[in-house]
Image (cartoon, rainbow, N blue to C red; front, top):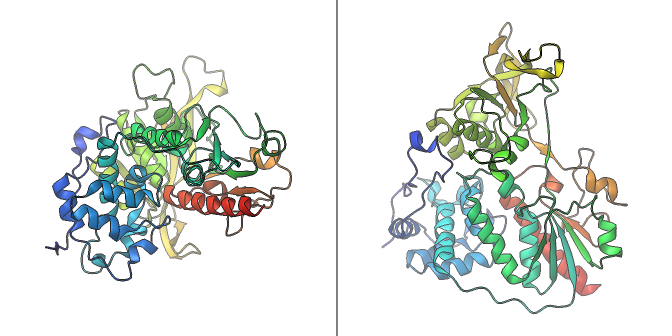
Length: 470
């Protein structure tokens, strides 16, 4: 019998008071009974609008139908035809703006919990399947993938299955890109990322770490000296942005990238970690996106009192609703309609003569009010007259977005980029350089995991056509 409830099955989670003191995963996942019950809410619509909302075009009603029947491994096989990272996407994709946003059940109630079902199916497979995949037969062509983040992993996965000899070059010592350095353990356990990467290695993908393309090897050398016939650039967008206000060079001011990398990749939250991290008492995170929520929730788990400082209102926050709600439940204070104008500091008592010892002592802010919508569709903020105040903090984390690192551009002849650094590509992912493709954050600037994966899939198909016709 179909489940006609207008409410979706609630996702079990850790208690907010408990989870705000640990880095264990917040969402605990559906039981088999919950997954089957939720799957029965799907109407299997004739036009399948949810599939149109998925950047990698998973056959959503088909896999959900298998879940409803309790045939979980068959459900996984359907997902795996389109997605190379289902356990990841089920956790971090903004489904509310994509597949679930198109769900017909959402018109008169809550949409089917597609993301939660994808996570359940992937976790079931990872727990119960011990058979390694068969390596595809090689076709004799070699492709290099730069970066092991979502776009690179997706591109490599599709290419290896088509028979290509694929090598991924990763600048860091651990593969995974933003999945390992950017997203916290409590949202995406790193063991899950490693499991997905191991699956690619089992298929035959070679991953070379500690290789900085543009420094260790250039793209031109990969083609001319190493014999790669096509290149995919999925190097992400790791260059942080700052506001340009006084005091941003003080001790205790971080970019969200640095702060999260120290915690997620280097495990700075552990007592035995070799990587230092500031255990501040009061932290201001400037920004309102998912990265800002991640940084704020990490700082909370390090024992700080944490503020989100955002110049627009709660309704304009770009972060996922679920992430905002989790942050609020954990006691993070939202200072909306607030904008920093200066970071204040004082000299460390150990050496008052050295200006380099200036440490954060507070943040001067102004209150904002909203006017008419701007070009982004959000109401434009204006400074409220005579509203200046000091926020008492000893650490500031800037989460204002990122842009692509200019290293690859500066060392690759003939590669055209946007004025802000994004690589220019056509609809097939082809750059201005023959045989070189790109996708993900290196092209768009910071975006979502699933959009990067979609770009990787497009490029893989384009590379396949290019090499077949070469």
